Amino acid sequence: MTTSNPPLRLATFVTDVTPPLGVPLCHGNVKAAAEIVDRLSARGIILLGAGEPIVICVYDWLGISNRAHDLCRAEIARAVGTSPDRVTVQVGHPHDAPGVDFSTQEILEPAGLGDYMFDPPSTLTTFAAVGRAAGAAVKRAVPVTHLGVGQGVVEKVASNRRVQGPDGKVILVRLSSCKDPAGWAAPEGTIDPVLRLLSFWHGDQPVAALTHYATHPQSHYGRGGVSYDFPGMARAARERELPGVVLLHFNGCGGNIAAGKYNDGSPANRPVLAARLEAGMKAAWENQQMTPITAADIGWEVAPVALPVRATITEEAKTTSLMDGNLRDYDRVFAARDLAFLRRMKSGHRIPISCLRLGYARVLYLPAEMFVEYQLAAARMRPDLTVCVAAYGDLGPGYVGTKIAYEEGGYEVGFVSRVAPEVEDVIMTAMRSLLQRD
Image 1 (cartoon, one colour):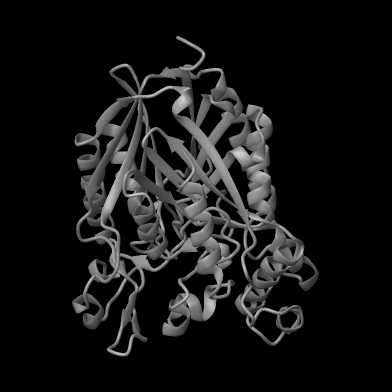
Image 2 (tube, one colour):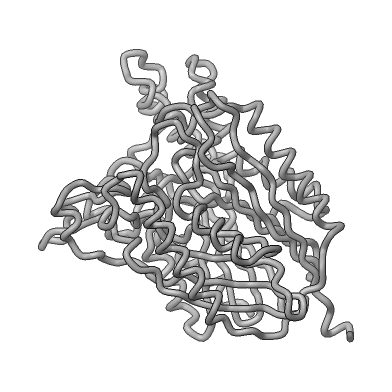
């Protein structure tokens, strides 16, 4: 092997991140953990040989936001001997799972709501455990000789949540489950039906696979049953078919995408949705194309961005809401989350947008609940490549819509988005810059 064609090695890790019973789930907005339906995991791959180690990790959690996102990446970086900007941590976003945010928790403490959103001690213990698992995995790294790239269409899962009228305004919000016949009858709308797969091989032996598909992952939730929901079920089914292969599944730009057209919220629908997603995963595996790969084919680029805060989020208004004991706890906590993001941006903090180069494939790692239009735009930016997208990194910004979406209205941009419409220019510029680098 010449120095111009260096070897590539890959390590994998899987760590249990199931929360203790009794702790808050979904930022404290649903029933606390009362039973364990599924064991949750943090899963990762570590790429070795292309400069400092590159770590790709995904948690079966609702969200990791603001300073919590910094902490979990730093813990992994220390353990594997790399820098935090070469570590990305995404979440799958199931709602029967923890949503953690130390920046907001610190703001809530003086208001007597410090334990509302999540359990800080068990969160720190989990971050440390994931770091240890990643560090130990490096010693078990194996050579990688080939990359597989495949695609599969997922049918009757995703639908756009924002049903628009003739004037372009949102007239119906079709969330993860829908009991309105009008929601079932409305078209799927703008989605990305394609599931994209990347796999790593040592000769003829598969080692790890990464799948990417854009949709909110909820079938039903909020009853206290800790679960990775239907994407986790699909992933588990594929792992049973591929023993010894570590599978990581990433939620793409699913901010305005959910299963509402095909899901009435009944528990019986969870395995139905899982089977449909599993079929897309299987199709992508079976049609993948293999190419040789070395460390020279690997690259990692980061574009830190400052996201514009929407005008309605001000220090005075949100502090007033936070301290108003007449408001619901939910509203006070939401005000604290707004404050946390506002202060992060005012402090000069930059949120990383990252891009992994894998031969003729690219993977973009984005923050927040991005609208699917960003994923579709990324594919158009490099039609000569396979472009995968994993969103749901730092969840601090909330929803990130397109510029026009803020004029169209709807739940995501009307209430939960913390960024201004100008965010589209920031994100598109960063994606274009990263994808144009070779």
